[in-house]
Image (cartoon, rainbow, N blue to C red; front, side, top):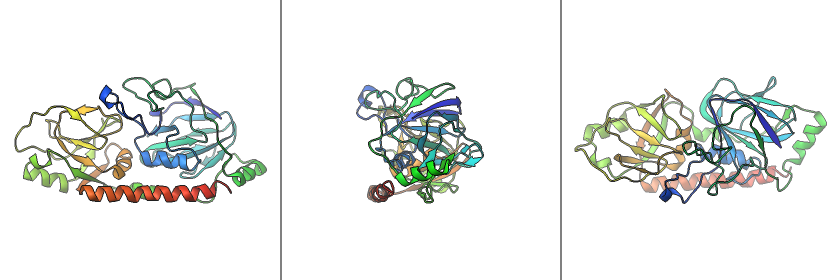
Length: 334
């Protein structure tokens, strides 16, 4: 399968689950901002979790399918359409050769993930297909997609959804998907304000009492200059009991940093590998997909949890993924 970029959007990049084991060399993992939507886009097609998808941010491109394709769209609703037909989300869809997929007004969420059967075929750099924007490598030539780019897909180990393919060919449809869909958007909880849970960090106890109360009780707003490196939060200014000079050390996706201006930064996929700002905590991994879907101007609140609660949340989510994988394995043979 191949597709061509007919018009570019705000930011569309090839992403997978990131590159691991290179932070000591100054290379962060990167990867999909919303790991859950990326994984489901692949599960629906029978791809491995790490198969590359397109991460489409806020304003999508126009994509011309040169060949018949099985695709999925998961995550944000960016009003996708093919001709006069609305493209359904959270399900596999057969798309005819010659179709033009376009996007319109962002209805909810910030990032949509386009999966294709077999995954996008791009060179691996340090074991990953993820685009590292600041360094200019990985993905498609180390950059966002632009007009004229052509992407190919990898081989498919077996034919999925044979009955859907048969219906598609018999009906000469432009696009066709099954009647069912995966309602994972319920776990993203697009309602406002977003609730992000965090585990207190090493400098949490160093905050003044009023600052701790403000952090837990006050809403914050996503700043316009947020990006894949970090989400900057607008809200009450926080302060420490005493200024602290810290030695830079490793940070993670989800780290809540407190710069000297008193405004929190939530580090995300393209974060730096080390940081010297005080760390107030770590947003739990199951809430990071929700954080990735926040748009500038939207509100969020922070809620404190224990390590044990975070572990239980993670195990519960992974069980849902496992159960979904079993269900989809049956659907893909029909």
